[in-house]
Length: 375
Image (cartoon, rainbow, N blue to C red):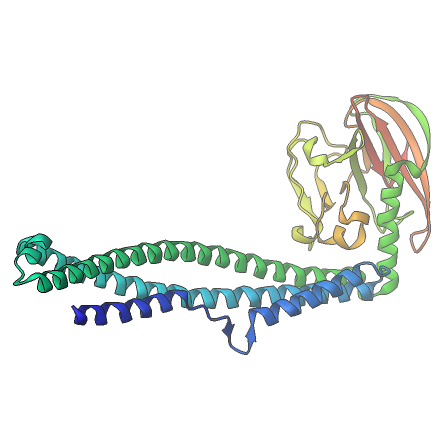
């Protein structure tokens, strides 16, 4: 009996210790150390975000964000290493517990083969021996029950840890993708602005002007009622008021909400200007039924939504329309309605008058056509 107890109890203590052991340090830094750096760069980003928009400030924001993402990757990698160690410990504990439980099951089976617990007690030479046997059998039963509970707990813990490991692996891959995207966006910003503060400010002015116009800040006049497909204007060639080059900015409002043109326009084959990066300027995937305002083939210069370029230059970080162009610069109404011609005065490098057309379609939808000469 003493031999059995001396064997079982130390073994259980070792198993429990291996399951509960949780190191928090891998290498020179703890996860807590890394979290401290993450908090530091998060705070720095918040401070940079409220400062004046300049190219140098934007680059500092990118650098801080890249550093922050790198730290998040390090933290996740540390978690994966620690979790891997715990899983290895659990695998070892599961193996030891399974073997121990199997051994105890064999001993219990042997006892049952020679008459069971009752036989061992009644066959004792005197009451003292019977009591000793009873106490011995009780310890065996308690040991068996404890082993079974520990085995189940270890199995449950192992399943949870394996799921956590898979989730961390997915998180790590997403963080690495984010890091790659952030670095690419920084490169694109430098390419677009040519690292020129003046160029950066001009692009900001153009983006803000588009928002001002479609919020009703332009001066406009009712021209006439138009039919679907009727010509309403011509795209201005080259740079013009608040525009760095030839394009139509097409935007739709439903009531007070801005809606992507992709929801209205029918699917067609589109091209993108040479060197276009869809992850930075946004992809266009039309899924509606309306005809386009330009004749095909149509080239995309910028997509709708919160893409990399929009996050840098547009108020709110969202481009509210799509920028497109075609060999034929004629612009047509996508739906019938009341046509208005408007203008907005722009400053900066692309100073002058931003011209636009607006069609109130009468179905709660208003279409805006910017950087065109209304007619």
